[in-house]
Image (cartoon, rainbow, N blue to C red; front, side):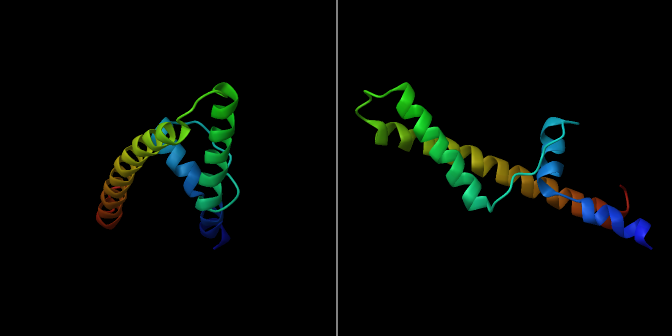
Amino acid sequence: MSFFLDPFSKVNIQQIASFIMYGDEFTIPTKGSYEQRIEEAWNSFVEEAKKLYPDLKETDRIFDSIIFYASVVEEIYMEVGMRCGAELAVKLFEKDI
């Protein structure tokens, strides 16, 4: 029985997503909630941008443009993920996998 339960203990959504998006690359799962991971990435970006462009006067305008771009990309990935998930669910029920 443990033979069948063992794979379920190894399932990690980040690794599955990485495999689907990039092929056979291995991804080490990131710690923290989605919100924490997003906040850390944003803070890192802002810190680096301010180092690269210390004299930039309109950082808020530029950051708003970046956020707009990222939100469009996020919406597209969400749609793709939902479609892939729905297709996978259908195939699971059809036992095609």
